[in-house]
Image 1 (spheres, rainbow, N blue to C red):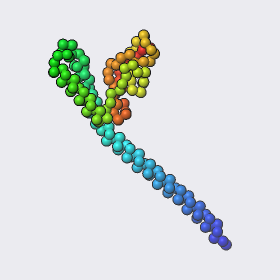
Image 2 (image 1 turned 90 degrees about the vertical axis):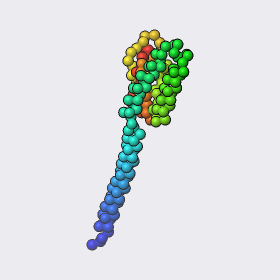
Image 3 (image 1 turned 180 degrees about the vertical axis):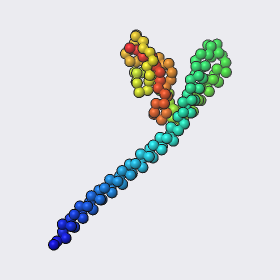
Image 4 (image 1 turned 135 degrees about the vertical axis):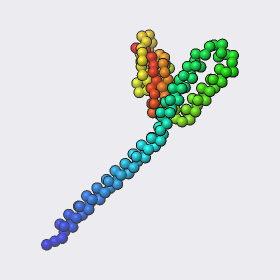
Length: 151
């Protein structure tokens, strides 16, 4: 009796085992890469809740600047100091990957904006005005902009 059929069968089993091993090794590498990406994202967005709290504070600060009396705006170093503080704060946020979402005059984009009201006169689906600024952190929306759009 020849050993040839047994050898052929063992070679087939060896090939199957080798393919399974290679698939398993590739799956493990993909798993490692996925875990590394998830960890990098977790680190990148770990301070998101702090950033959102700071954005709320900045909203109030921006309202103070926007509602300052005209006489205060033009003539005092105090107001200029407030403006500079606001600019510095926004720049610091940019350094940490936080960007304001531009909305004024743009086409409505539901991925970064929430429409809270509509106006009848104007180009359809264009942003008429912004109610609350929206922000992205490392290209991920962390707070959508609230806008009024034209019908």
